[in-house]
Structure formats: structure tokens, C-alpha cells
Image 1 (cartoon, helix red, strand yellow):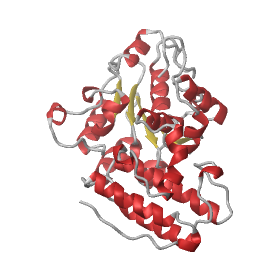
Image 2 (tube, rainbow, N blue to C red):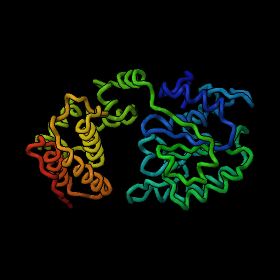
Image 3 (cartoon, one colour):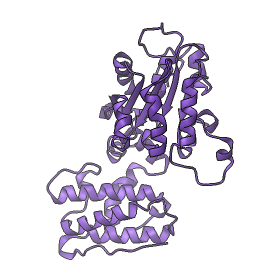
Image 4 (cartoon, rainbow, N blue to C red):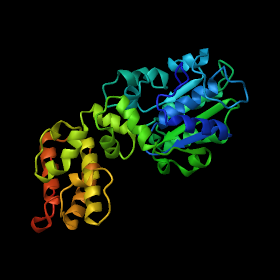
Length: 350
């Protein structure tokens, strides 16, 4: 969101915000692009700009960051803004469940936080949109990530998107717009969000005390927020550059401390780059010099299939050390030089 100095937390969003305000004509906007570049932050800044009381009605300018409405958005207490997030994302994004339609029972529950936007929350958003604006500017509902709506939730929202109340505006933020119902997409004005310029993203990461930000930015596929998440989880540039040869040697090292979904993602990226190199294409996530040489294509394709199968169950409560050992063994076999290559064995761990 826009701070009291009129600045955005992610500098590369300034152009996208200006474009959204200049071109937005409908009542619903779908912000979409790669994960980890700020769709949610752009959605908040857009909502704040629509609600800003320093911007004359009918003009399309970024929020001032200083008026009473902006302060309410900044304090997450604006009566005309409803932010819907899955329970699993609320803490990470700094948004309390009371602010986004979650109920107190869900907050008090010891069950694993849901990753879905539940139908009860969507119904609450529909009712919210139909009430009168408290401050007279608009009613804004922000859903993130919109692809977390299941079929029932999406259909609950669909009717309101077709016939919105007069002051209601909707912002849907998505990293996977193809996962949304076509009927949802067709009722939203699309706002594509591209990867930020590399120099701007690396500068931002350096400002957040990330060593060798160019390495982690490449590791995250150009997505600076994901690179920052990796660094905060203890995955630094040194560990990333060491990973290919570490796995080729069958050395698990400290990998058992990595969250399993993160380790699987890292292995997927290594497998991708190894396949690129084996086919004569440039790697994307690792510098070429960090990758083992003469890797067999057959072993790599089998490893890719094994990783895909494991990723489908990444959230399963595996025996972590045993599972990591199995994954490292598969990686060692796939990354072995061609003359010694064997197909990776399939292990399971519980």
C-alpha cells in the first residue's frame, strides 16, 4: 500500500499502479502475473487509491498516503475495504483474520490453516459489497490469491460480478489465472503484471541486506519477493550455488532443515537446468559453471517424473530425514556422469 510519503513498498509497482488507475473502467479488475512480484501489494495500493479522500472524485491518481482514509487502510481498519485471504496466508501477509472475513472459531481452531478462500468468506464479501459505503467513496473487496476459490466459492461470487452494486469494486489477484473459472475471468478487466527489471529487483534485494542478490533473484526466476522468502528461510546464495554439486555427490548436508516443498522446488529447478544443459540450451536458475557436466538425458527425465510425483504429496507428513535422504539419492543418480548413469530408484518415506 502507499505509505505516508506517497511511496510504494515495491518500487516496480509504481508504473503498474498508474496504468491500472488510468485504464480501469470496469467494476472488477484481475491482477495477474508470476508469483512473488507483488500482485497483493498492487491490489492494496489500488484499493487505497480508490478510497483516498484527497483524490477528487472522477480523477485517477495514486493515493496520497496521508488522508484519514489512507491512514485507515494503512492500519487495516478501513470500513469500506474487505481483504479476503486464505487462513494459511494471513500471518505471512500481516493481515489478521478479523480484517478479512475470517470467523473467530476458525482463528481459535487448532486445525491446520486452510489454503482455500472458503465459501463462507465469499458470502460475507457479497453481503459487504451490498451495504452502503461508510465514507462515501466506494466499497472495495480484494481477493488474494483468487485461484484459491473452489468451484462453490467462485460461483457464489459470480452473480455479484455480473450485477455489482453501485459502489462496489472488486480486485482479484492471481498468480494462476488459468485456474479461475472462465466466467470469472470474462467479467474482470485484466491487468497483467510483468517481472520487474533485473537491476531494480536486485537493488531492492540489496536494500534488504541480501548478499549476492543477483544469484537469489535468478534462483527465484526473477521474482524478488520469492527470493526474499528464500533468504529469510536460510537459503542464501552460497547454499544455492553449492547445491548442484552437493546433490551430485549425494551429500544431504543441512537439507533436512529445509521445508520439504522448498527442497522439492529447488530440485525441480536444478532438474530443469540440467535438462536444458543436456539439450544444449542455457540454464535459467543456476550459473552454468555450478552445474555438473555430462549428465545423462534419460536419467534426468526419470528424475523429473519422480520429482513431479513427490511434489503432489509435498504437504504429506513424511519422515523428513528419510524423505530427504531418498530425494538426495535420486538426485545423485540422475546427476551422475553419463558413463556411470543409472535410472533413479523410486523410494517412499513415511
